[in-house]
Length: 139
Image (cartoon, rainbow, N blue to C red; front, side):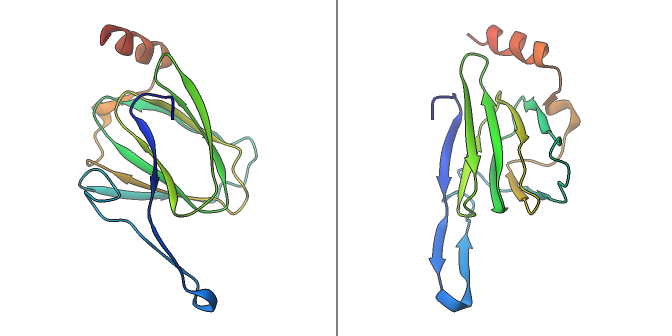
């Protein structure tokens, strides 16, 4: 991936034929941090829905689309990249200081997020201009 602090994560995937699939994520193995929070997003019925629209100062996350598909747009302040997530065992690791938006959700989309820390509002950067100012200071 060309956006800083981002990379593709591939989970253990087992096709059990008529018994379905088994996908495994383990802290500090496939997921490069200890998982402190897990949440999911579903019921994205509107084609106009947009999620994310923020960055984090310290938090690290891995996003998976465990059902359906969606488009993830990543921005490190210099480079931008779009990734289609549509395979439940393939995700995207996002380190800190990555602005992200999610859109173009399929009606059956379910997003699973594994996070490195508990929810802390002060860790969020919710204004894009503030994000750009922050990443430019780090250069």
